[in-house]
Length: 119
Image (cartoon, rainbow, N blue to C red; front, side):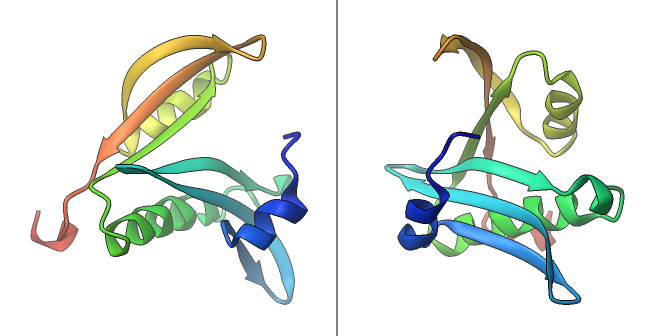
C-alpha cells in the first residue's frame, strides 16, 4: 500500500477497471524472470460483489499467458484469510510463508495452461 503508484503507472504495470468513466478496481502486474507477479489487486468497497475481482484475476492470467509466462505468483498477509481462500479457489497453491518488512506473508503461485479452454 506504500507503493509509488506514479512510478508504477510510468512503468506500465498498473491496470484499471473502469465503468461509467469511474475507476472501480486496480491491478498491478510486474514481470519477473520466469513468472508474472500479481503485486496488487484492489476493488473499491462500493464496487465489491460485482465480479470485478474475478475479471481482474482472469485478466492477470491472460496477460501472463500472452507474455509467455507459465506461472503467476502473488503474496498476501497471513491475517488476510479470506483472500487466501479466494486465491486457493482460483487454483493458486501456497509455496511458503515468511516475514518481510515486519509482515507475516503467505506466498502463492499458479501454473498456467496455455489453452485454458481446452481443459
